[in-house]
Image 1 (tube, rainbow, N blue to C red):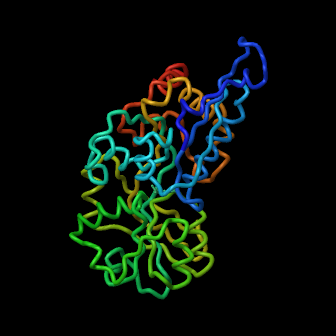
Image 2: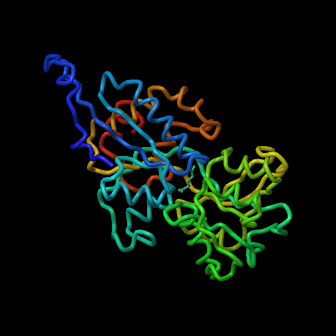
Image 3: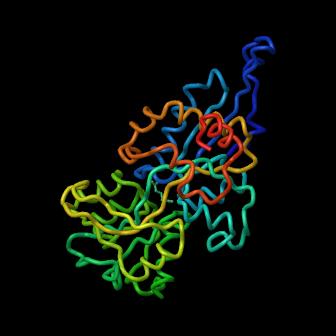
Length: 321
Ligand code: GLU
């Protein structure tokens, strides 16, 4: 991935225009997740709004599919991505240098931009697998997710609370988010995990292609996580959102958040935030999971890293802080 500095061109030079009209062209990338998740839509939506103003600010935004939260946080730290969408629990852990980020240590350059939709820890099982509760996953073929994904990182946390390791499963596969619905319906696995906003394409695919069912995730270990850590909360997947899943399903969850680092300039982050909030009604219409977004909550909920200066500038102009 090109770094910002290398990718900086002067459009005015290309056009032979005078220096007075120079709009510097800058390329930025937002890391997302798999194509059937919601991060991908968040990234595409933010970029679409940013790119509409390209002739004014010169920023060209792209949002490729990635391995998910942990992969995005690592890529931002390495300078391979400018921004990324990440789970609030993983934002915290990257900032502190815990768990997946223990080797790298605390990331003091990490900056929060805003939080987006809520995500639920979602377990979905084949209808014939006899899985009615989270504990029924024992002895089954379970896709625990690719390393780099948020669901894998949060699953590791929950398994540790339960005193489980992967040997409790008959099979622990590491498929990417976009592959798991098909693997479930092809009877290669009994259950899949996804920390994701609802509705989303992957859960829809599993429910409609092979009658897959949502499984509640509750119990003392979940209660402990929710009580102990500010970035976890109880959550409900509404009944009737997916075919064959009429009941509300209780679980826990996180917030999806947009993060960056101090190496992205104040001006670029300001323009990204401005593109989203100046066109907020349009943004909200881009995905049903954005329906209940509220700007004043978005600059607070689930953010543990300090806000980026460019974001603060816009939020202060708006009188939101
Ligand atoms: N929460 C997932 C992750 O961090 C991604 C969800 C999505 O793509 O919407 O990997």
